Length: 218
Image 1 (tube, rainbow, N blue to C red):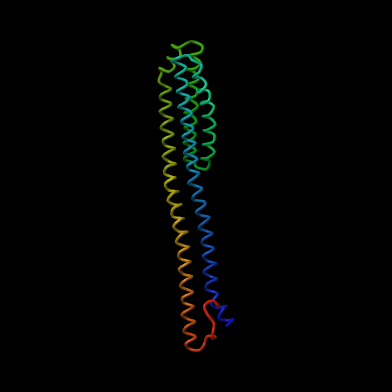
Image 2 (image 1 turned 30 degrees about the vertical axis):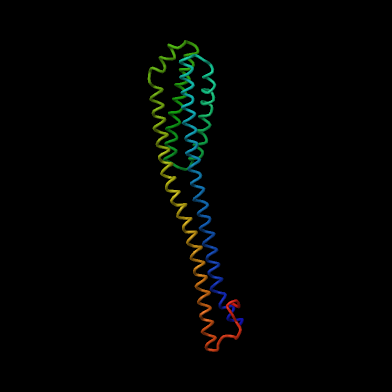
């Protein structure tokens, strides 16, 4: 009886051990996949904050140039302060990607040039009045820079959206693998128990199994 109990317990123990290992391994992969998805959302959020800051700065600059009202300088000042912070956070998030590092270098150059152009228009309005500020804007350089910023941001967003789709697919695959592993382990456990029960019944019929020994004894 003792030998039979030990022998019958080995397959179940192996199934449980293998199932536990696979479940742990797949769970770790799932956690990593979900982290990558969340990370991509962080990048997209930071890109959005950066571009909104530049748009707010441009809106404040134009409002001040047109009206001369210092109230427009408050959102302008806030925006030009927030833009570099958002850019720094974005660059930190994208460390490790050569392609995105090159995109960030181009974006920084464009952003710096755009902030400088807006600063010139604001300074001209303060010191020389509307005609001087309007002349700065009339060059079209500010619009060209903003269009270039918009294009560069669109490329970064496109890259992140592609990564997001890929990472979401991986996360979904890991979820399916974890689910299937649990189902397979449960099914295999049932099959083993049924096999042991059938074997025990056959042994009893042949008089080779201890009388009174049930499935609970395995």
